Amino acid sequence: MPRRRGTELALLVFAVVLVVTAYAVVEATVNEAMSSAVWRYGAFFAAIYAVAHGVIRWLAPYADPLILPCVALLNGLGLVLIRRLDLAEQADAAQDGQPIPGGDASVQVVWTCIGLALFVTVLLVIRDHRALARYAYTLAAAGLAFLALPAVLPSRFSEVNGAKIWIRVAGFSIQPGEFAKLALMVFFAAYLVQKRDVLALASRRFLGVYLPRGRDLGPVLVAWGLSLLVLVGEKDLGTSLLFFGMFVVLLYIATERTSWLLIGVGLFLVGALIAHSLFTHVQDRVTVWLHPFDYRNDEGYQIVQSLFGLGTGGLFGTGLGGGRPETVPFAKTDFIIATVGEELGLVGLVALLVIYALIVIRGFRTALTVRDSFGKLLASGLSFVLAWQVFIVVGGVTKLIPLTGLTTPFLSYGGSSLVANFALIALLLRISDAARRPPVKAPPRPPLAEAMTEVVR
View 1 (spheres, rainbow, N blue to C red):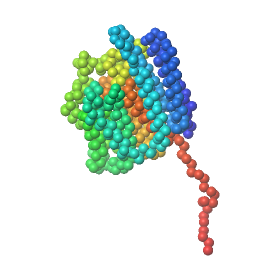
View 2: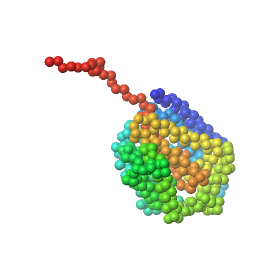
View 3: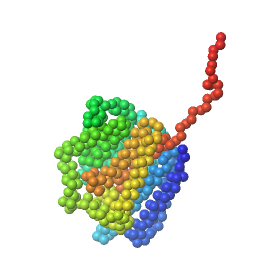
View 4: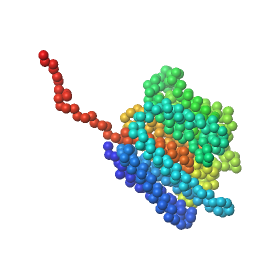
């Protein structure tokens, strides 16, 4: 199997050229001039990903060559879009006579460096992904603690925009749920490898579908209950949906039983009805989702502005720096997809989704080729959770599903999501290195080792 590190380097150079070009277009359009900051930014961006490439050459030489360049392109475009929104905010502040804000692009660059540092640490510490299975229950406890911690903290330390999903201390904030999904993913993969044969047993046939035994419903019921607790305790629809969907799909992959998918969808519908009937914040989300223009001046303002932005972008967009994406609240975080749709158009948005699809496809390809069952389930889960999160975000921005408050991986502003997703990519590259690495040949045995022997008295 060729290592293809040269291919990875060439694709990284291409990604850096695209990112620097986009940055130059933003500067030229908004400021009507290109400063030396464009080249400094380009050199720094190229340097940090050159380090990541060198680490892969050293620690994971057989890893998939397409994943890191796709991540670099998404991360670079995210930094460019955040910078573009910073410039718009600064221009509006100057026009209104307000203090000029410092901007968030520089902070996101720092988070990118921290994320790549964790990326390198994961590759350096975890030399064999199978070793994670030994710590499955420890990671499960840590993941549940991460999920529960914001719910038990006072609101002033954990609540932002109505959702208790943060830990905020002395101006520093972190979203522990982003790291909980990785810990729980490892636990789910290890647990389902051990219990796969039992969970695949069927008890009876109903409407052409073999249903599992009643005693085996425990794990999926526990996952369903925990997702409801997250929804109730933290008012976080996105994490609840991400968590439950992740477990059900892993269960289906492990057992190859369609009945588990049907049971999961049924439990989700029951949970959605319970949540809608009991909790006012869920009712408000659904009402605004169904009739956003009726609430365009208050709760529906965000989604209405997003739809107007996507409509303004049309097929080819207004061009980087040519639109008004800053009129959408939370344009740098929850609604950065609306910025892409307005300034790059439908063509640019579809191209962005294709980049995500490439990462997911290569992840599932890794799951198909890796030799151990734990690696197959873990790679499948990591790939699915990335795809599922993108679907939830894009579905909310385009009004396909209710808004959930999740961020777009590698694109949105935010440190927790960026750092956790770099760790996710590091795990995926570690598994792909094991999948593509040639098997070690057994040492040759001496010729006489196979000879017949006979005892002679």
